[in-house]
Length: 169
Image (cartoon, rainbow, N blue to C red; front, side):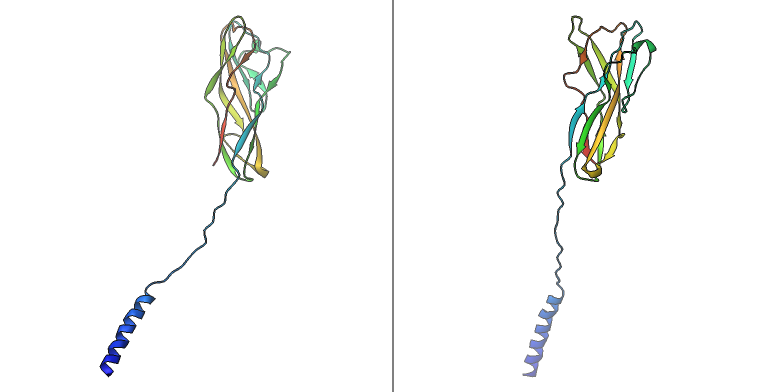
């Protein structure tokens, strides 16, 4: 009988030892859903009044709204409305975001003599990235407008407008 009891004890210990070989642990699962990033256009990019000259040239409006030109004769004392474009970006407070500017686009007139001008060399403030301090940030955008020789007079606009893209980084 001692042999059977000893054998039973060995078998019981063997099965008990297997249960000590397996352990279990768990951790919590969580997710943080943040406010989606959005952008809204506020002010248009406006180069103001420009004189078409025999030389042509470029007019630049900086991201801070300052205007300059490659040829002095393009600008006159009566400036018209000059402004950098502005956008309001909203999202999760203190998160960073990237800014993507277009490469170029065209503005055209609808006057008797149809014509176009290229808009390119975009700059922004902040430059390339920003932070949503308190969940909002203003982005301003400037660019360069190229006039050809004897650019036709008229009011030039773009049907699509200036579009920029923002995304969380």
